[in-house]
Length: 211
Image (cartoon, rainbow, N blue to C red; front, side, top):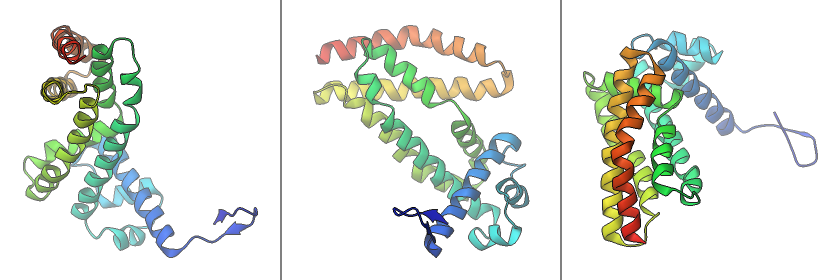
């Protein structure tokens, strides 16, 4: 039940209830991926974390494969929305190059990205997951890099900025993946800062030449 404009309770439609249940299960899947890893993410555990019955879970997702495939899309949507939503502060900053690099770091932190990494690793030996990741990942990355490219007005500079952003993300994701074994977040940030010394110079040159 939700409150209507007149303050009275408004009954949700079946479609709204179904969408809410799916969202609840997908959020629980992300929680499980972060807490237990891909191997430990079972349909039973997801139902428990979501606080729903196994019957309700099976009604929406018949198998772990169905659940995780939907979770990939769920995560991709969250990451793409965050990329566009948070970009405004980069353009407004006094040091765009540093803001871009800080933005990339922050966009790769938190449970959403940890869960995404779990699925990337699992996709190495799972053809169904691999196909789904291959389908949605270019959309997410393209949204982030495309938004960054809007910081510069001319097309040659946009291409250079996109190339630098992809290079930065490749380096950052490698650092974060290796940090799973290291388990020292301070060391991962220190390694990223070291890479940024070189990336910041290249980004500054690209942004300056575009102005």
